[in-house]
Length: 272
Image 1 (tube, rainbow, N blue to C red):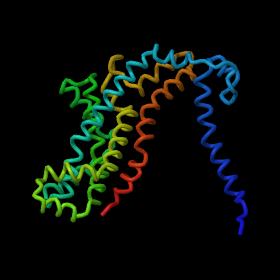
Image 2: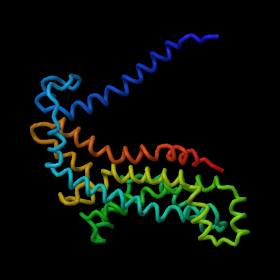
Image 3: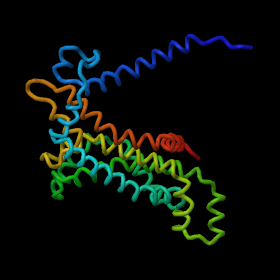
């Protein structure tokens, strides 16, 4: 029997498409028009003349240096997370001692502490350590605040590995190091992808730590560099949105390749 078309679902899909597509249309078309055209014609009109000058001007305003600094911070934070979190999560899952349980609870406590609550002592510690206005002074606290969530996600993923696999490796005479490298890490790819994407987002979009812990142009990141498009006479909206589009591309590419593993890893948070 032929089913009747679901017109209500089709209408809902069109409304959803409009809600999603309209902001993207405004964003992308604004980057391809001049400031005067944007001001006179409005954000919803199609550009009378397409131009790539906004993207070129973004780099002339120091966007290239900001992009490089943000990339350094992001890669460093992801590197620290990948070095610290997998062995920590493995120890939490496999160890039976009370010490590991206490360490895990301390990490979970970090989920309840917002960065704004510790920014003053953080500023004091970074200044006393001689790291103020250096990228390392932004990297370390950003990585520290990424560790609790990443540990929780990867611990949930590793708990889904069945005990029988560990027993099989033990009967083979495998050491804990070999079990970790040859069994745990390959079966935790979804969780690893999740913590990579999460920590990269935290670092790439970070604003508070760069704002408080840096001041010079040489250490400015993208989130602070966007202020360059705001002057005393107004805001260069096309130029600002061009910089926003450029800043979105790396993270969008990372998410594009890791989206399936990201969803699987987040589903594993509530694992057994």
